[in-house]
Length: 335
Image 1 (cartoon, rainbow, N blue to C red):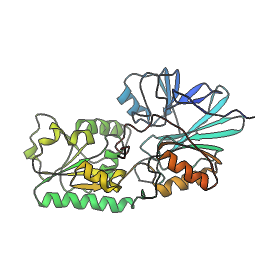
Image 2 (tube, one colour):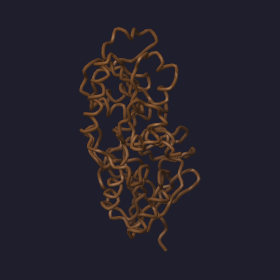
Image 3 (cartoon, one colour):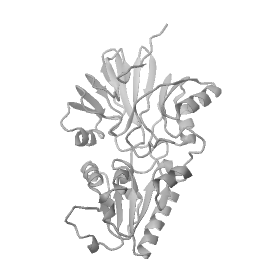
Image 4 (cartoon, rainbow, N blue to C red):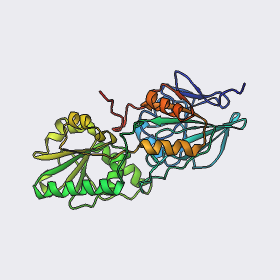
C-alpha cells in the first residue's frame, strides 16, 4: 500500500518524506507557509519557507525569523520530497504548496480564490492526485457578484456619505482585503487609515504594489482638516473607542459573510459589501475539477457539508479538522 504523501497531525499537515509541516499551528523545526495571515503563519518555528512575495509581510508580523524565499513554480528538493509553490489568488504572495513523493502529487491549497482581482497573482490550477482544500464558503448561497459591481457599490456609498456630510467608515481586514479595496476605489476625497492597515500598506508599497495615497490616523491628527474622507480600519476597531472619534460616521463592512442577512444584522453596520478573498461555491468546484484529483480533503469552513457533496459527485472526499480560520475577517463563525 502506498504511504500518504501528507498526514494530518496535532501540529498540522506533515510530510514524512521531507520531514516538514505546511502551515503548522504548533512550533515545528521546518514550516512551509502558504501566506502571511496569522492563522497560517504562526510564530515559533525553527525555519520558514514561503514565496519571496510573502516574506516581507511575514517578517513584519513575526519579527526576526529564519526564513527562505522561493519563486512561484521553482522546484526544491527537501529530503525525499519535491516541493513547489503556485499562486493561490488570496492575497499578494499567497501560494498553494505542491508536494511530490514517488510520483504521487498532493497539493495544499491554503486559502484561495479563483477569480482574478487584478491586485494579487491570479490563482493557478495545479494537477494532483490529492487536493487539500479550504471550504470557508462551501455552500451554494455563497456566490460572488463581479468585482466591478461591488466596486461601484462602494464608490457610490462613499459619494452618498460625502453628499450628506458624513465620514464613510469601512471595515476590512488589514492584510489583503484593505489593500484590495484601495485598488478598487475612485477617490473623491482623502483616504484615511487605521495604523494596522497603514503598516501593511507600507510593506506592500515597498514590494511595488500600486496603492493610492493614504493618511495614517494618529492621535494628534486634525480630522476636521479632511473633507469627504473615507476611513479604512480593521473590523476589531469599528466598535471601540478608536471609531467613536468619527462623529456622524456611516459604517460599512466588506466581507463574504455579508452575503448572510443575519450576520449583516449582527454586525450592525449601515452597509454590507459582499467581497471576499476566498473562493465562492462555483469557484471551489472549478478549482477542484481543474486539479484532476480523485481524493479531496476539506479543511476549514463548511467541511462536513462540502465533503458530503463532493462524495455525491464521485470524489473520495474526507473531512480534516484544522485550526485554520480564526484570523481573517472572512472567517466569521455562523451562529
